[in-house]
Image 1 (cartoon, rainbow, N blue to C red):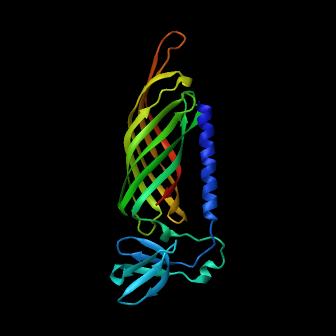
Image 2 (spheres, rainbow, N blue to C red; image 1 turned 120 degrees about the horizontal axis):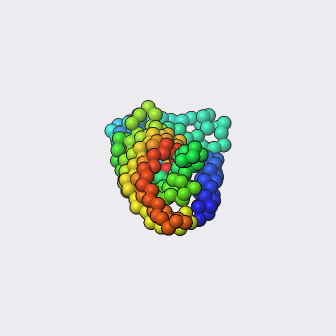
Image 3 (cartoon, one colour; image 1 turned 90 degrees about the horizontal axis):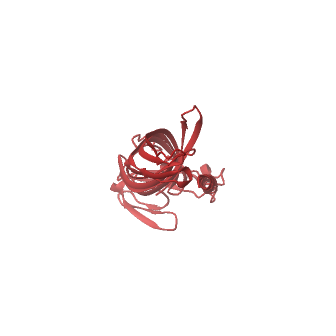
Length: 261
């Protein structure tokens, strides 16, 4: 069972890397302008018309046309054709990083730990979060995950959690801070002789950075500590005894993910 899970996680990681590479190389460049609104929204678009004191009309991807009053506009940054002529792929910048709206985020997590006898092993996990960024300072979401903390003993948990996140640095909108908190359901594992398990408190604060790789799509990296309380019941062993292991996993965890807005 553990070997099958490991193969599945490696396959998912390879698919994530492949998808990221393809998205980074996808369409030919288009000449775009960047429109910043006072409510925090940002649009990459083609300006159709603009009359001072009147309206700004733009066209966004897909051919949709939008219009904004002048008092709704914070600023307009026009990107000349020469900037794009040297590249065959779109150049995304911090102007493409969303600060408001609905989002979905999936990631792979890796955490190293040291065993009882000085040996090291790598734990890993998967998670999915959906939520809404209300402002630069507050986003709220809910999520679920799966974590293999100890491949040798087969100790696993499924956390269900709430998430809060923020983008505190206006100059660097790629930087973010997040915190997750909830309950992790510990899992039985017949292959590892775990016949019963009890979950407990789960928490994971992190600091990270996001990179735009497509329209409303970002590659994310973050690092932070993770805590998970759990109790596992092993046995019976050769002597007929049951071993009860109460543990609080404390792991420094690196996550690599994709966020879609």
